[in-house]
Image (cartoon, rainbow over all chains, first blue to last red; front, side, top):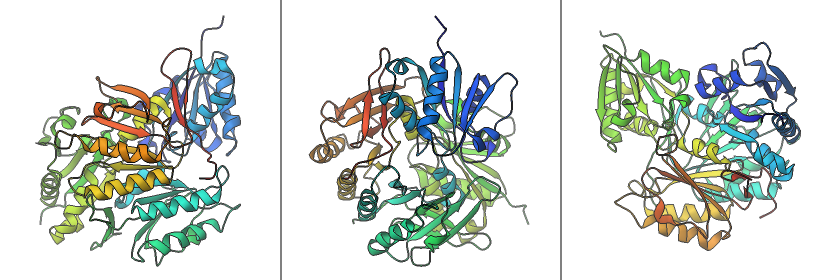
Length: 254
Length: 254
């Protein structure tokens, strides 16, 4: 019998090496095999003897199956995910694959190693917009009907959550972000602060601070994350530099 | 004129050193002054010449003012926060203090350094329960009326979010957690998976997996974080070891 392998689902954060935890670095360095989307693997140092299995974007279930088969075959696999693997990233796909897959996969030694998510990095760049009850919603309707997304946006706005939008726009659905803003504009105040964070932590990072009235939803792309304030979110102007954005920890009655 | 100081609001994650990012370690090591709640400062290596300003728990605004005064006085301050400073931690308190405080504080050089939050660490321990749209709600009614918290719980359950509860119970409000569960039990299915994560990342970490029907809200304390599944959250039993918990990335219509 082969000695058992292992699978580590590792988050390397959103783009900046100084945000990769020591746990993630160590798991990547001791793996026999790295599996992941090519741009994530390219961020990691090459190590002799270590095998790399690069896959395209999307195809999460195929990537999960590949990682699980390698681990079942006795390899020590690090499945590399951007951000936090548990937040709109690879971890859920792996457990879904296990749930639907070979019974023996349930016995694989698996650990998830958390990472800084783009949401946290974007918030940190401007201040503390998540300092208050918040929710995170993916606008992708690949795996859920748009009607659920609209309903969630409506209920989240009524609950006065700070709302983080992941995957706000793609070439396949350029208009959905306009529909989402229409839902929010019908419920939330025009002065609500909004943060557009593009490519956070990467060289082409670009952050802009708007209000619900002034924001152009069309400026969101594949690498954009949007934070929509609650009624307790404030913009603090500064003498020099971009303003701070934070959400007050308290709330008045709704 | 004094050379200008700086303030770094640094997250050191939930208890485990391997989750402290290199950025956080570097900011802590180069600061002239560390400010923070004593148990967080005790986790950091002593450095000669560096001053430590330990404060009690609570008192976030006083701690923020102290850090801002030091930075305004030319010191290079690291304000140390557990978890992610932007998620129910110190960053919002600092910006609130600036908003209400000395105009000169707005010119201080401030950077927030994100950290792994307890929510992410707890999720990683069991699988991927946040793999789907989710929200985070603090049950503390120190700064907001209980009626808002109840309304948010109700709307979050109707939206079928995965719900993360921070600060579920304290000596001052031992019954609120029962009221919260009553709200959730009225809306969500009895079989909904629930994760209780106590002291995650610390030596006395204890994680248990329940359902909404079986869970005893009374076992939550000050250091507990609770993750309540959506209709798409599943428990995957294993041959040996605790089951996995994950939320499927897709959803059917509500």
